[in-house]
Length: 427
Image 1: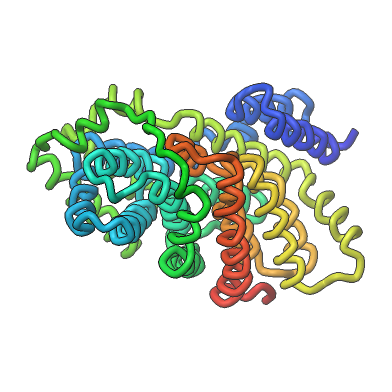
Image 2: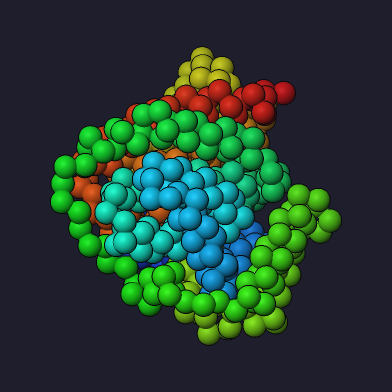
């Protein structure tokens, strides 16, 4: 059997394993890489090159900076400022929390930001009877989801997509390529929340008894009681600001900027190696690296071309870049409701990139549209890690569908408008 077909069979097996989840997703990804080598689809160096990729180094460094933000208390202090701004007003607290958490998620791992803010929400709800956690937690998770989708380093899906595009067609997203469409969707979400979503959420779950969230008591005490080292907080905020400035100015590569920031956090004692080992999301790092290896193997073996030809045959006479773009984004958005968003990207992005190469479309907007489609899924608790984390507030499965469907439909239309506006679909 030709290596390209063997690679497709391995990919199909990986998709089945990702969906059914008999073994953890990182192990599934590594299994796919091993099979690619053993069955002669690609050589060892190509398949496992993802583990030394700059994209993986960028993701892990951004996580370390996020850990240091929490360890020094910088994230909690920002949360306290939000509490003071709200003055006990639930709507004001919700909007302020969503804006601040969303903006922080553009540069720090959004799951870490959400974890810190969930602790903040719990502390507020314990002391202010006018603020209910169910009215806050799910919208807050959506805000970090939209904020995290607005830069290259905000979340795993765009790093996965960037790695796949780099391996398949040799094009990479820049730090800010997602920012235009991403901030458009973030603004759309905030308008939705202010004019409709807040009241709509209260009609869905407002009458049910509140549950006590299962929050790490040590982290909760760190929000309420701790007195932080002002020197460390100042250093942490300074590093974060300089990191963002470097991202904007582009003095040095993005991955190197993140690595320098992470190294400074360790050298200056803002977080320890033990903290990093304990708090680092190793599953995400291994999963991302293995996904990059699978993408490289599919490219080397010619599997991508086979996928493109097969889909082109199914499309028949359809050559409209907008229609193909809309279908791929919708497919990604649907798949992402039931499996992790990075896994959905592995399924649909190679198809989109192959069609772009076949028909002469621009690869970048298709990559960004598919990435955003995967990143905004929120209609089930299976959609993304951020959405799964909200289950501590006691939402029912139906709550996610009722609350998430109109928001998802609105943002799908937003993607179809914003991405072609910033990036023409065809050259």
